[in-house]
Image (cartoon, rainbow over all chains, first blue to last red; front, side, top):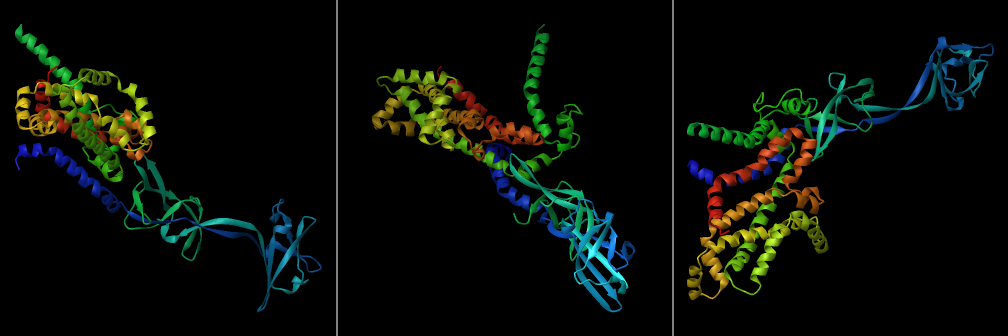
Length: 210
Length: 274
């Protein structure tokens, strides 16, 4: 093909090229950009407990168990507190659910069975003072033990794109294959759980669901 | 003295050319600039304007055509409008112009006068009546709201009529001996001979339709029907670093057309009777 022929066909070449790019740009977009699996953090309701051990507890002359009521916040209603007492003596373990009664700056544990705690070797009191929602993510989502990638939407004139953002997180307890995130993410965030190649902060990604 | 005059003329020509070419060269060079450099130069203003980027990159084109592949919706909308309007304009304008130039009938001059009046009117004057008409026909927010008003352009009829005036009457009279059908004479004699003028009309119409702004802005509410010409205003606000590459893609077909067919346009316009 001579240069003159090429010049004559340049308009056809231009539109053919644009047609070609149009057909392949979407495929290319999905092929070039990393494909990621995402999930929202699991929200679990967990009890907020205060554990009282022997050194925190006292016994009065009648064998009643009590502790300093400064342990519990002043505005906490005693009726909302769930109290579980685990007593052990040799091989015998006794677990009982009790109520609390405040008297002269002390908080008495009232047991319906009227057990005398003097007989027991070890006593553990668990005060469940409320519940708290905590976020759990898959352990595989955590990078270097302190980062996660979350996916955010970028909307512009040409539509919606997904990008990833690397954010530091504080981790809490682990449960099964999940780990608690105490700080860094919100319940509505989409956390990257799996990725088919390495990603970096700000990369455009394709969601596996798309 | 003559040398001095030529030198001054040359300087004037170079200066004028530079003024006209600078924005185009700037757009082309900026389209090969990285997004970071673009932001530093033209958004934050930390560096000055340049024609030579630090690093030549096709990243802008990649971002525009792959990362924002929906750009092509607007591109092909422009192509669709331009091609359909150009084709319909030719279909409408050729017979109309021929009749106004070569067929004698009562009220012809009055009709021509009306054409010229409509042609001379600013486009904005007919915008509201057009809008009301299209609304009543239920064509608003469809591609036909762009295509139909543009296809029946009085300028195209006038332009071709001026060319047909220069067409020798003797040829038509000779053809009349063979056939009485005006359509046959038009299609078999006039159109083949007038190809350069029709081509020139097509190029002018294509360029005009490629640059439509007001009509789509007024008649279309659905952004997915917008032509590329209308996208630039929003593009500058949202993705300024992609404006240059989009502009290069946008101006390319019209530039190619001009460079390919500039002789056509010049010779056809030269033959027209004014």
